[in-house]
Image (tube, rainbow, N blue to C red; front, side):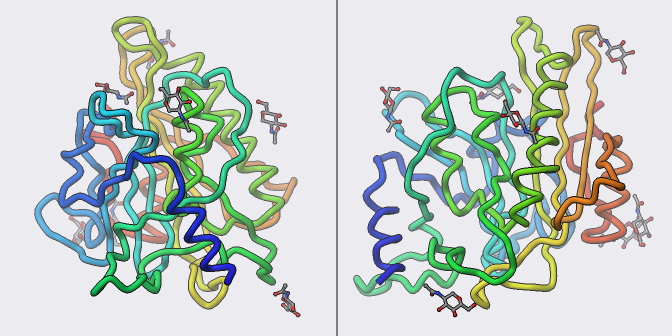
Length: 278
Ligand SMILES: *[C@@H]1O[C@H](CO)[C@@H](O)[C@H](O)[C@H]1NC(C)=O
Ligand SMILES: *[C@@H]1O[C@H](CO)[C@@H](O)[C@H](O)[C@H]1NC(C)=O
Ligand SMILES: *[C@@H]1O[C@H](CO)[C@@H](O)[C@H](O)[C@H]1NC(C)=O
Ligand SMILES: *[C@@H]1O[C@H](CO)[C@@H](O)[C@H](O)[C@H]1NC(C)=O
Ligand SMILES: *[C@@H]1O[C@H](CO)[C@@H](O)[C@H](O)[C@H]1NC(C)=O
Ligand SMILES: *[C@@H]1O[C@H](CO)[C@@H](O)[C@H](O)[C@H]1NC(C)=O
Ligand SMILES: *[C@@H]1O[C@H](CO)[C@@H](O)[C@H](O)[C@H]1NC(C)=O
């Protein structure tokens, strides 16, 4: 019943459906130099990995332009996103929206008119009453959105991972604040408008909620932008997805350090931004 309600709520959301695409070229505007990251075995320019689905996220599409809000690579086995990629252009003037969580119907197409069993994604019910002390953590946080519709578009479970409740509201929220302040200060495009390309991701861990949805071991984030001296700059952070430890503050790292960390603990030879943001 809960599942049914969740799905009904999800389906009753405003028009403007996202698209599951063959290639991130469809919404390349969210990537530095219009190039998606290279993550060998997970996201390669020239080969398909059926487990990982590329989503051009859309919400409240009015028919003007492409209507894409950000891009997500989604792991249909772990049922969590690998990363979400977005343009940060300054936080808009809105308060945190309160809307029902959405799902992505295109990840579980209907077969013979039957409702899909949601094998390929997390649903609301997965997150309810779990014994792991986790709740829904955004990759693209609504507090980095340029306007209210974009903020609402982040409330889809394809942009969400199970995050330790204290970490979500604590250290990781602090990092979201810090990167936002940093980008507001540093990142200006040629027209002197705030602009940064951001990638935020999760490394799958060992446990699952509801025996379905992976609880990531780590969260990571990096941005790449042009600074006021017209030089490409980047910053990165990562942190374990567990209750914060005040003795181990999370420090700002370089893009190289993040890629080395990912190489050691997740995927080898990752290139997050073309030419390492140079
Ligand atoms: C994102 O940034 C690129 C510049 O790299 C720009 O061309 C594009 O219009 C931006 N898209 C959105 C939706 O902000
Ligand atoms: C929540 O989970 C606990 C055990 O983890 C169980 O005893 C309880 O009945 C569950 N509550 C609901 C509303 O499902
Ligand atoms: C959809 O966009 C229109 C115009 O951009 C705006 O007026 C409206 O409030 C938006 N609706 C939602 C549900 O965000
Ligand atoms: C992050 O910033 C918001 C205001 O933008 C503030 O309400 C919140 O407490 C900050 N979070 C942390 C962990 O400091
Ligand atoms: C831009 O970045 C370069 C390289 O890190 C740095 O030397 C320069 O001071 C920065 N300019 C501004 C205005 O922050
Ligand atoms: C990544 O790790 C592999 C194996 O541990 C190593 O061969 C490779 O040089 C590493 N690459 C980078 C960029 O650190
Ligand atoms: C990573 O790069 C190293 C050195 O170029 C190579 O030996 C290794 O096979 C690569 N690993 C993957 C997973 O592509």
